[in-house]
Image 1 (tube, rainbow, N blue to C red):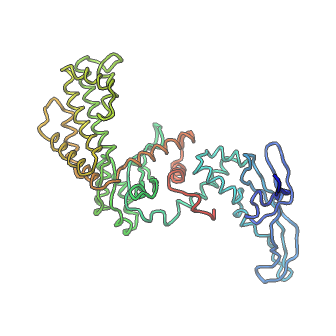
Image 2: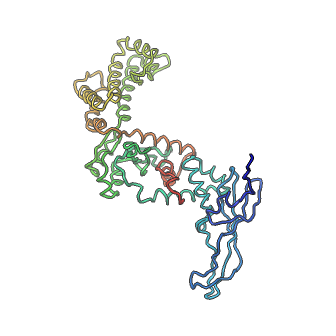
Image 3: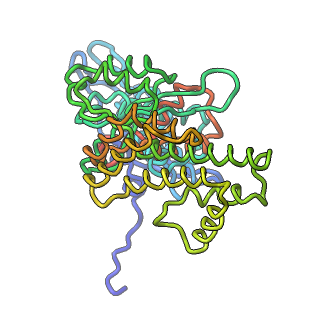
Amino acid sequence: MSHGTFVRPDLTTFTRLDELGLQVTGQHLEPERAVLACRVAGDDGWCSRCGCEGVPRGTVQRRLAHEPFGWRPTTLLVTVRRYRCTGCGYVWRQDTSQAARPRAKLSTAALRWALVALVVQHLTIARIAEALAVSWNTANDAVLAEGKRLLIDDPTRLDGVTVIGVDEHVWRHTRKGGKYVTVIIDLTPIRTGAGPARLLDMIEGRSKQVFKTWLGERPQAWRDGIEVVAMDGFTGFKTAAAEELPAATAVMDPFHVARLAGDALDQCRRRVQQDLHGHRGRGTDPLYLARRVLHTGADLISVKQLARLDALFADDTHVEVQATWAIYQDLIAAYRAPDPATGRARMERLITTISGGVPTALAEVAKLGRTLKQRAGDILAFFDRPGSSNGPTEALNGRLEHLRGSALGFRNLTHYIARSLLETGGFRPHLHPGL
């Protein structure tokens, strides 16, 4: 390099301690951590009570965990000067609120780093605590408190919500205690194309009353702004939405409708299997071998799979499975129609066909028809309200499963809800520069 600009490094600038109102006065490198000696920049030698000048009265040292550099834990030893007023005798210390909150063990920069590591990089609390060289409880308490202040307690968090999704979620797999929670998702960004869906809240239990109570606690103006509620087939959610959000449109999303048809197909296949062979499906049984192919959309079936289906349906004893499979394919085709109007017409025709006049032998189709007829308005509403699918809700449930796996499970529901809101609640660090 012909015009080198390398100079002696300024540790204060390099470690960004100038942003915290600190200046580095020394450093000490240990095998497991780096220690930076600091002092508070500026002079606080004037009494805040009477305005008289103070005289130095010794110093105290404050120890703070700072953001790691190169994954080496960094500790700040901040020398804080004490003053005594010459007029009223009041004693005070230099202001370190810019560097850290009172009685905090993490610097402001460390807290920002930990929150970004948890939310954006999806690190565990254990990994964050290791990088900061603090205990698990210290890191966890600090991150959750800051996340609660920035996101959970944000009064504007529910503003602009017009489309919500509701679903149940299993938060723990134990024999004792309740394991279900109700999750409420903001689907407005999906519909408007503004971004991904986000978790609005998580409530213990799964029932009509749980969802109704949560809705009843929202301001009336907020409830009046809700246009669509996407949900599964649970009638409790529908009833609660109808009572608390009478102007909103209930939409039963394609995922759960298709699952109803898929369950009917599986039940028919298992019944025919038992009737023909007297036992559950085995590796050599044609119906068992075709169980996955039967759930594949007709437009995605390969030549080899099509040959397997032709051989399966060539057997007259499988005619009931073939008829149920055709109904399942018609339902999938309705959702994959090129335009909503065509899809709506196909779905409406299908519901009319299977809701009456179904042969007695097709018990699973008859049951499916009754269910679809009962929820026909909610099912068809999807085609009138594009972008109102509850699919993103299922996607967020998957992210929460990953969160629980990373943490090796949760025992405290309050902790789980807070972590879930940070993980999927739409927190964006770049929107909080003052973190």
